[in-house]
Length: 320
Image (tube, rainbow, N blue to C red; front, side, top):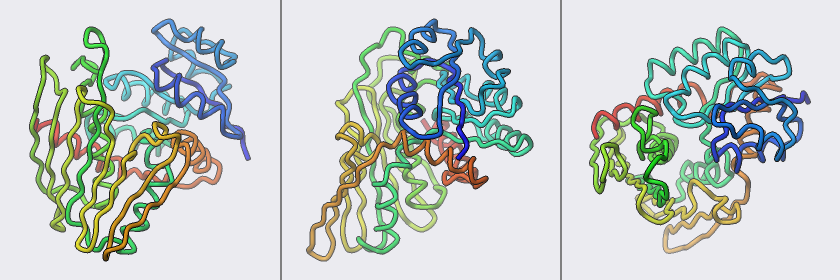
């Protein structure tokens, strides 16, 4: 297998706490460079033994020792630097939401095709084995036909003074930060784009979405519902109602909050089942990305699915 040499653009907590360790924990991946405008690059380079520190993103992208980049910048900056990386012939794994409009995503995808590099939005939860198992069970009719899927993702935001997630000019807001996960899983499990979208904003003390509830209807008749906020305790659930049973995932998006164990409860025909699936979603994401490059395969999170995600997010944002 080839060794994939990574450059890290941005020093956000998600990079420090999850993605950099994940890259280091997988075979045939190494981090050769980091660049940050926040002044944190030196500390991270020392902590994780990253040999090259760049003081500009352009310099990192010019490095011949970088094959792929992970972008952990504010949402509004994703498009600019993902495009620059693609044009520098680097593979790109970019934090979600990868961009804020379908027009921008189409431009990135066309550029990636032209430069023969991979581009993927970093929805790591899709690579935890529990999600694949849920898909398998639903396809097999474990709870009959899907009627409704309800998802929740909440956590308590601590810093209300200068957190970038509260800055509308940087693509902030709870929809972009964590509401995107329920959107993604609804589209993935239902395999349709919604035909209608209704959205509400709840509690808020500032001019940006911090507490939302959304309802979506799909062409097949399935209903999708989700809510998200920066106020409640950590809540990350999926409930699926079928014609013959129900299914619950109490650690749907961050199984690492449960010692990396994803739990699936489902009840059907008066029988109750519990399945435990263990895995590190972040390392599995890196493995899948590397495998696609190694084998010259399409990504399992496809371009069409990424476009569907961005289109749905745009529609919800307009409805809020």
